[in-house]
Image (cartoon, rainbow, N blue to C red; front, top):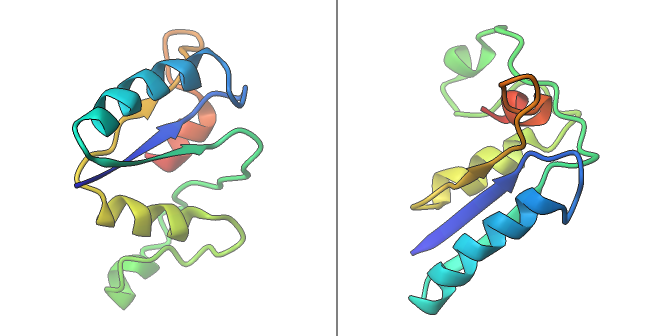
Amino acid sequence: MKVVAFNGSGRKDGNTAVLLNLVLDELKKEGMGTELIQLAGEPLSGCMACYRCAEHKDEKCAVTRDRMNEYIARMKEAEGIPLGSPTYISDMSASMKALV
């Protein structure tokens, strides 16, 4: 089993990463493969509603200037996807919104 966690904080290795690593450490103890992807500093454009993914039916985003397709592929392989984000004005971070 593989679990891929995403840290949506603007601070790499900050409090959100600490909390996600606590979860991943427990999963490692159970013998699961884990990975933490930190979105800090990653330019993610998010969905532009161009519908090319639906036209091509390849489950890939037409926008290739960021790492979104790589993240989508990792999520498809994973059996668990913990998402971590600080709350800004009662909402998740912009990078987490772009990922989701």
